[in-house]
Length: 449
Image (spheres, rainbow, N blue to C red):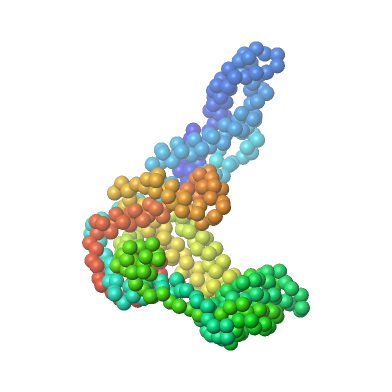
């Protein structure tokens, strides 16, 4: 095998690789010798088919199979001899006609292109100084959380038969919906409970129930929204014939020991402790997210080295594809939607460069610190991903298990978080008390990404 480096440009490398006809013949002869004992051909004793006959009958197919493995083998050898770390899968450009190579009439010659990993020394994480915002859980917030919990457990008690429905009441009704006088699918129900003001029904439906009382029969005129999920109903006028069965008034439960016991707890103190832990967990998550962003900003500013163009381009394409999806769905904010495409592409390319740079830095810091992720952590992540698709969990798990790239994407954020946690453990981290609003405020600008 002959390997000649033909291009060194930044992190881009090209190599000319040649495997001569004689080398190919030797490897083919070795392959034939390997399979000869298992050969079964009519007219020959088992395992006694002459190598020359095997070569005549199966030489081309064997050579074709062998070349695919040989390219992989020679690539790995060329990379090992060059002492470089690939940042991408090699790109192969074959020279000449592959049929000539298979027929043993030409050398196997091709050019291999790849990006290599940059050589850099990451910052010592023990020298980093990170400010971590924290917020205290106030008694007022605990009270608000308890009040919201009580509201979620609201009870509705029957009102008098002559009582008229008010905003916030639950109205039990039977209804039949019609469009152009015809009953439509899904527009009929019996004993449906409608809480006036919750906005769970078509706009205008709940509001027209204000003032009705048990026994009333009335008609509600509404128009389905233009973006209604059922396209056959979107934008159409409908009439609902309604019979009122009962009016129920809301009664918010008292937040006391009995309320806590109704939730399966011992008393109100235990409920407050649980609510405090829950809110504390939300605060801790927000604090870590803020600290992580500050850490990533510090790492980005501390490193400046060439990036593999292929990795940057791949990251940019993913970001731009997501942008186009958001644009098509009409979810862009006015400022972003007004920017010229060239300006947006420049911004997103800088984001792609930042992400690639930080990914390489975190990977190198993790390698030096011998950060590892366990198989249990990977399995937990896989199960969590599968649960996002109820009823298809088995198919999701099998998909990941069969796709190495998908598994790598699953492992990447786990590894990143463990490296971030490692850095936050060894760096100098100073807690700064802020308000709840500041803790949960979104960071703006490129540096927050």
